[in-house]
Length: 168
Image (cartoon, rainbow, N blue to C red; front, side, top):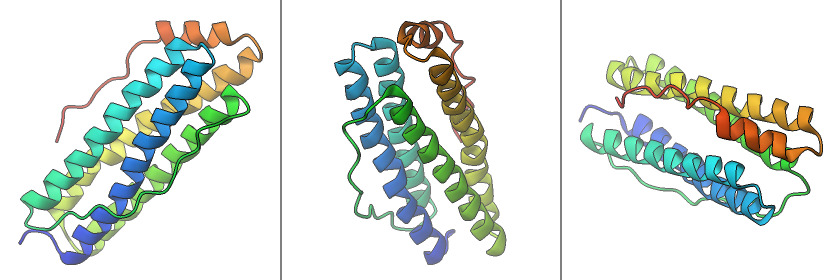
C-alpha cells in the first residue's frame, strides 16, 4: 500500500468539502438563474463540474495508492440569498476553507514523508490560487457594480478563461 491509513482517511474526509462545494455551486447557479443572471449561472455551473472532477481525482488517487476512499456525510447547502454579493461571498469563503484544507493535507504529507501525496496535492494547492483569485475578483466586481448587475454579467461573459493546469 502506497498510502497510509491516516492519509487515506484525511483525503476521504476532504471529499465532503468537494462534494459540498458542487452542491453549493449548484444552488448558487440556480439562484442566479432565478435572478435572470445567465452568465453568473453558467459560471457556477462550470464550477460544479470542476468540484466533481476534484473529488474524482481524490477518489482515484486514494484507490490507486491502495487505500479505500470513503465519502463522509455531506453538509446541506444554502439555496436562498439576499443578494449576489452574499452568494459570491459564500463561494469565496468556501474556496478559502478548501485552500486551508489542502494546506493541512500537504502538511500531513510532509509529516509522513509521503512524497507521492505531496506531488498529488501540489496540483490542488496550485489550483486553489486560481479558485480563490477568481472568486475574490468576482466579489470585487460585484461590489463595484452595486445595483448594476449587467456590468457583472458583462464581466463574466468577457473575462478570459482561467489557465487550466494539466491533470496530475
